[in-house]
Length: 416
Image (cartoon, rainbow, N blue to C red; front, side):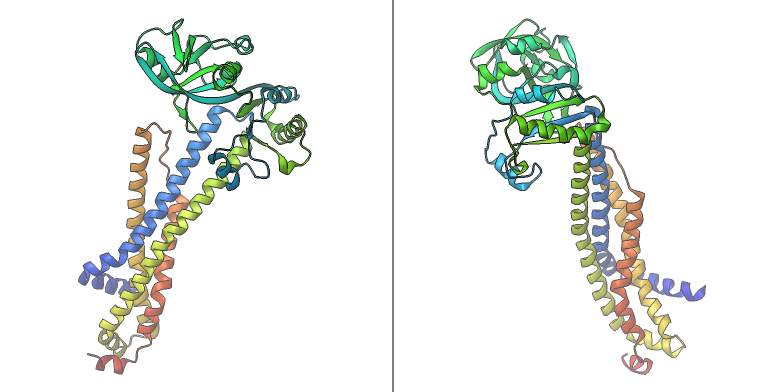
């Protein structure tokens, strides 16, 4: 037991004599471990946030979106094409009606968005206008607060009616009852027939700051288009999701007269598939960030190796004296290895504490900004952090420790 305690006592004594050097040497380890803990915690919180959003929306849906032909929906090429201003005009409301005839589809809504100025008396606001089918209110989690939502008859007759999101209603009307009042959107007047309850942002879409309008009204009276951007279809049996997605792909290809799947100008995905995709993306980001955080550990390890070399040189006489008093190769090796491991282990523990503290602060800030952010710490992540600290200590401390253990005691005593 004394053989194990002695290297630890010597290590602690050495650290106390060189506090500044010890602090700076361990700082790289602290930073690296802190980064790893924060990344793991943030990754778990983001995953919980995304899963929560999807579960709140429902998992019994499939979504049909436009995409650039010859690209994958999740590909960089498609993203660049869309950001670059490419507009796919082939997705129509008729496609949604064709999909709705599938035996596992119970309901659907199509949608398109535009941005216009809306004003009531002296109040003017630039808002997103969400043109959608009447079934939106039956499928989505949005709820009517006052009045009513528009009907399919309103949609087909191009009725000039709107439903206001919670914040839009407050900014245009304040405490005044907007039902029955008229607002001006672009150049036309529209009658307010309803308002929605506060919902908040979801996947970057803040429905509280939108104006909802019958799909065909927005298409033909304001935007001058006949296409939609996306379709949501509700499934009767979510367990048949994969098969339903395959069937809807065939329906859409038939609608668009496409025979080569590589030329698809649409993408079909179920909520379950979307959750799997999100898991993959979040996991990939975590791995990348952990790899970047590990660079700090490597830098810290190199720093430890350098300091250990300096320490071996400075303590050559001490090494010779210990060997002259009977210390063996393994005793000297264990002494310097213990110093390296203790330094990295302490740095790892401090890094864990700092990582937890920063993760907690991030959760407080995110929650205050309105995100459903859960403070989460992975026990497996903490264990990994400790193991990584020890491994770094062993790897970068082993060579200097071996150099110290190999020293000839007579030459070491002459060094003084």
